Length: 210
Length: 271
Figure 1 (tube, rainbow over the protein chains, first blue to last red):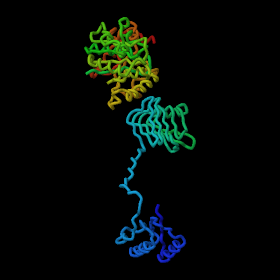
Figure 2 (figure 1 turned 90 degrees about the vertical axis):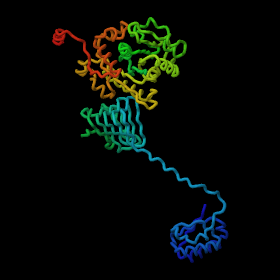
Figure 3 (figure 1 turned 135 degrees about the horizontal axis):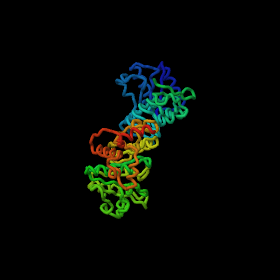
């Protein structure tokens, strides 16, 4: 743990305050590593070197400085203390960039009866038909470029904006965000047509896609 | 190069065993060496349809378990030179099949035959799994009605995931054999049409076998229909399908029984 000191201009007054503090509690800095935050003071390189020298004289071990450009340090390193003790740090290993999670799934084959396609991270696109007795579950929307004869469950993780699109509607069950509809409730005029299902409040609306 | 073919459907009673016998005999009639294997352990039928029920001594289970060798179990057909039957056991059940045993039997048969035709039991359990396991090619027997079509779809999904070929990431060829088809009833809307079934299953068509009393007649005689009455409509359809299996291109038709001119004319009027 390092202590952060944030000096405020003017430097003389701040140093005087610091002296008062150390007078009240001697040994306050007692070898503690200190980081100096100069973003409030914005000193010139020379003023910074002077400040570091003052602090060194007061036995304040400054191990790092922030809030100024690295160019400020030309010749100022002498005043920076080296940390004592601790463990040698190994080479920093940059955390591996997590593989970007796919947000859509494309299936190039028909989904056969008895098969389930489940995708909890986004949309599912099926280039083919979804057979009677098959099931497609997606957190996002479902797109079927073929006949939808099985079950389509969109917005499975609670997404009321998810939709179901298909080229030929003959679904056994449609569901969006938990609101479902079976074939019986479907307008017979839509059967076999390209269609779109979406959620309107608590009602599932199915419309022709023409 | 031996081809392992599974005849399967999911649903029972659609004509798997009839089609196995008819296609097996038809391929053998073209000079190919063929073995038909009954995987319906406990409910064997292929021996009856092939007319070999009184000649069964050892069966598939005996060979799988090592109690008999292949030569003891294979039954040679009396009508066609190059046709053999490996019957199932009637007294055991499907649990008697083992993965290693079935694999060993199939590999031994591959050395001897051009075609190994596995007659799958109905369902999607153990027996059906072993019948499809080593297949290079699947013939999906489907009747033109919705429950049969949906079960076939289920089986196609399993073929694409559970067979050895699929597990190696290879494509397993699947062909549709539409059986018990009646063009007149399909036209009336009492039955699914060929195009409806093809649209749902989206696999290539191997053949259309018309509904015919000849099929039942041949079964009861204990003869594959292609041998019992080769000029009947279903026989011609099976013979065409067998030639397609061998890579020939033959126009797809639904053969019908040849009727006498007058019979046709008056038959229509009476209806």
